[in-house]
Image (cartoon, one colour):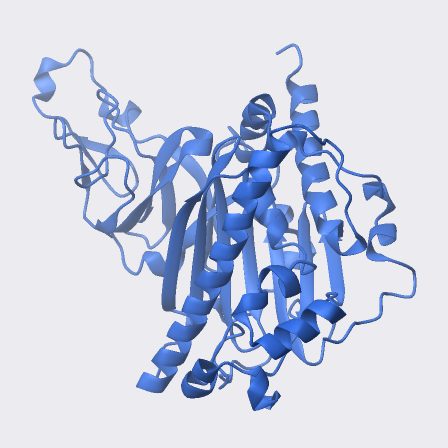
Length: 421
């Protein structure tokens, strides 16, 4: 596999001297105390993506999101004005979870004209206003106008729904995203509504799984069995270096070159890829999506494989050169467990062949994800032994340095601001 030249000014890590080159500690991934600090300092202050507007196709559409990292459940709804709003999923009467089906801890979605509590039938409209109280005359000085649902700050960018749990967000969503991300405006995210979704509990700290997708140093080794033996051997011997890394505020980007599988030697392809005209990089037939925004493929890779935009703290938008995208979410549940969600988005298939091609790409992604997750559980168990507390990172792992350093900076900033409060 071809190696690509590094920028003229030096290695990627040296391009960001504030990150240093020393070995790193993973105490932030094994410490319950640090986890409690980052819950407050990061997840209760940063803008968090919780879904897309396609999940709310009409007025009254809603979905719930369980967010253990901030100890709450929220309901996200499209109101009668067509706006997207978010509320804590709790009834103002006795604290029952307001929206759920048979299992209170499971997420749900649907359509309604109002929300009705299962416990005592208090009702709320789509703007969170309390509209009905069963036997209202039994209550003392009840002013329904004071007891609506508790709102959560909510904003939408390019169809992505974000929430913020701070009393007042320190930045607008757009300012938080910054130019590297907002330069993606105009990408046809809304046209990609053929959707596959995977969800799994991973027994590793959330940052460790993010780390797995911030470098491709591991790819020829860890994923060798996903490729024909001849190709795997060549790739493992040559190694792989991504041609472009970028850091913008708290966010990161890694871009890679593309392998046009259909142009490879047939002996280097899997038979199923020839049959389905698809593979890990997606369907071979690339849809015409029009002119791409300036933020896509900023390194002008040719051939171009993908851009992985990693939005702090736990959200990834990965745009594939073959005309589709996927997202990753990493939702912490403890210092050494988290929920991983992977969602793939394609244009609607026009033929059965296009549908099968999308399904093969989705299955290929799932297999790669399982391999990464399995390795990380092994990583977590051993770094918890604390036999070693200094780990070497190569130049390709520059974004790993940034994630851990940025998380620590948010914790330090929060602790400084709240000291003595």
